[in-house]
Image (cartoon, rainbow, N blue to C red; front, top):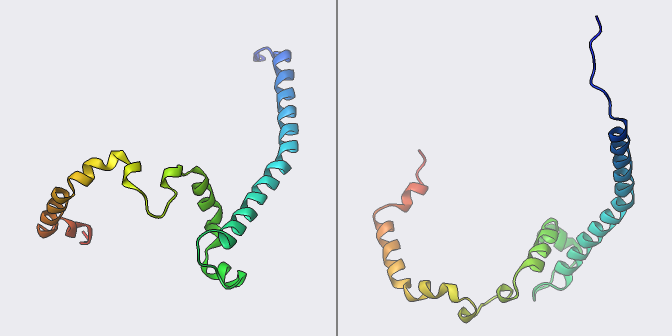
Length: 130
């Protein structure tokens, strides 16, 4: 006795194969563009961090590769690009951060509470194993 199989929807099958083909074509066209754009971003971030970021410079490319951790240049550049302009300075003006006003007003209370916790050995729990 033969088992019956579900009928095949030929129109849906043709559409699926067309989508698969079009996706393959899209990836085939955009793949090299994406890879070249990513490569340019990586090389550009190396150049930016080596030559333009900060005030001190490495003596050469060899020192940069050895001490500068260039593998972290692309993520750092992404962070530079996505950081809000008010937080891009080394020393920030408190007037630009109104949400820190309660901390500024109550820093002595916060310090006193932290010292009490320290004297009670509360922070020692993070050092002790067990």
